[in-house]
Image 1: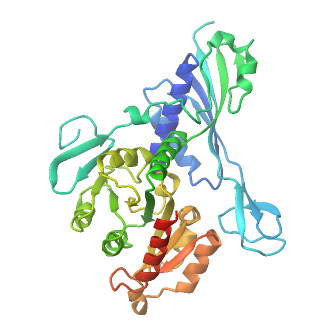
Image 2: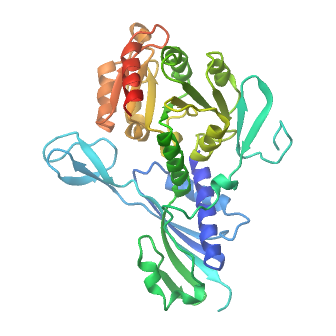
Image 3: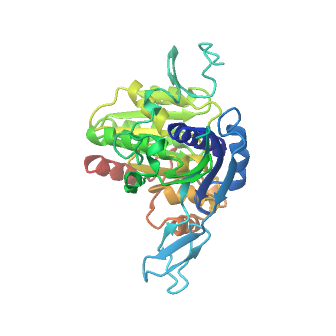
Length: 117
Length: 290
C-alpha cells in the first residue's frame, strides 16, 4: 500500500511549497501520473483525502492527469502507444522497446488561497 | 507508541542490531536528513517576496522556476516537482557516498520466500575473504534475517519498517550511519519482500537485483512488470526443485526479457550451490570494476 506513504509525501511537499508562497490554504492540487508510473490513481485519491486531514490542504480538489505510455523501437526508431512495459514494434516486430513517456509522476500545480491582499 | 522506548515514533521505521536488545534507532522524517536542502538540484528559489511576483517574472524563467497566475486571492503555482523528489535527492546523496568510498551497493528485491536471505548466506562467505561485505536487512518486524547474517560475522543492521511495505532512501541513509562500512566493499540491501512498492523507491544502490524462485509462476515478470522493468539483473533461485514443479525456465526468461531487454540473467540454487559460481564470478568482476 505505497499509495498512502506517497500521498503523505505529496501533502508534505504541497504544504511546504504553499507556506513558502504565503498561502494559508490549498484549494487545489494537480498531479501528473503516467499510466506506467506504477501508481493507482483511484487509490491515491482516497489516500490523499485521508493524508490531508488536519493540514492546510484539507478539502483540496485533487486532479490527476494520466498521460498514456509511449514506446520507442530500438531497431527502427518508431514511436507508438504502449499500455505495458512489454510491447512489440508494430512496424518491424522488434521487442527492443524503450519507454519514452508514461512514467511521469509529478506535482504539476497547486492552487493556494492567500489572506486578503 | 513505540513498544521499546515508549516514545511516540510509531509510524516510522526502526533500526535494530542482532544481539543488542537495547539498541534501536527511530528513522523519523523531519530530522536533518529529511530537511529541505536547497543545495544542488533543488529547482526553486525563494529569495523573493510574494509581492514581487508580477514585476520580477524574469526570476522565474530559470529551469524549473515558478509561474504564477493570480485569481483574486487564490493563486495557482506551477511546481512541476517529482513526487518522489525528496526520496530521489536523498538516494543520490547515498549514491554519492557509496561512489566516493567505492562501495558497491546492491538492492535485493523479491516476493517473500524467494530465498533472498539464503542466497546472501551462501554468497557472503565466498566473497568476504577478498571483499568486505555489509548487509542492511529490511522487514516489517523481527531481526530474524539480521540474526542469520550476523552469524556469518559480517556487519549487519535490521530496518523494521513497521507498517511500511518498502525501504526508502532515508532509512538506508540512517542505517548506513549506524554501520561500519569499509572502503571498496559490497553492501547488500535486502528490501522488504514485496514485488510492487520497492520498485518505486531509489535507495542509492548501484544495481537492483530481482530474485524469483521456481516455486513461483513463470509469468511473474508479466504480472509484476514494474519490478522487472526497474531491475538490472534477475536471479532465478531454487533450480534444484525444477524436477518437482511445473516451471518453464525458458518461458520465464523470455517473459522477463520482454519486460526488460537489458536484464542480466542467472539461474542457481542457494541450497545446493548449483550455478552460484557464475554469479560469484560476475559479482567479483563488478566489485573490481564498477
